[in-house]
Amino acid sequence: GDEFGQLAAQVCVKIATAIGATFRTHMQPYLARGKRSSGWAKSARLVRSVLLLPSAKAAASAHGPDDDVTDPVELTPEICEPLGELRTVLRVVRLSLAPRLAARVWRSVANDIDSVLVNELLVPLALSRSRGAINQVDYDLNALILLFKPFTPRPELAFKRVQDAMLVLQASSDGVEDILNSLNPLKDDTELAHELNQLGITKLTAPVVRSLCQALLARG
Image (cartoon, rainbow, N blue to C red):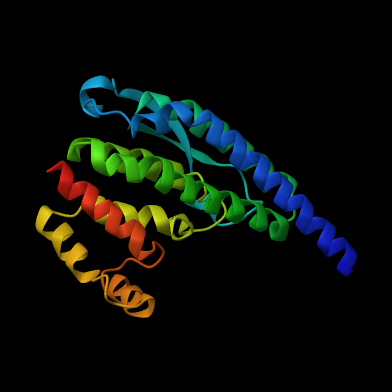
């Protein structure tokens, strides 16, 4: 009944919080790269990492066969171990919990990671990194997002903050200026939200987008 539902919800929150906190801790070496001023591509030796990414067949069912394909992908070294550990934990969630409870857990984990990546990686990255580094981060994060594919055919929709931030980070200099100019500080929140939606930015707030643009333009 209602009591069981409330208890299940509380357990899901605790599981998701623990997974998110552990992943954030393991990601610290990777997140720290966004705050360094030295060149990412020059300091990072890209490694050939074999990541077992879920196949479409496995993704079709939350409790379907664990058939995987092996995709060799070029990842930054510091993200390889955290991704492997997260994949293992998500697999346990998928196979151990009822679909409804597993959905609560993975969505909560994805939401937490989505926020952490923007605040602790992508915003600092805007000021201190080259376009080559931004493209590498985009590649790394796409590998992360694919780990959620066994739960949903479009896992990128659970990482809208990351998608929004990468849209800004990968824009041309003229594009960044256009975005910044559209965020007139005299406009109210509703008008700003409309402007961002027109640009395809649906989750990030105007202040965060403005700070990204200003950092990119200051970097030159």
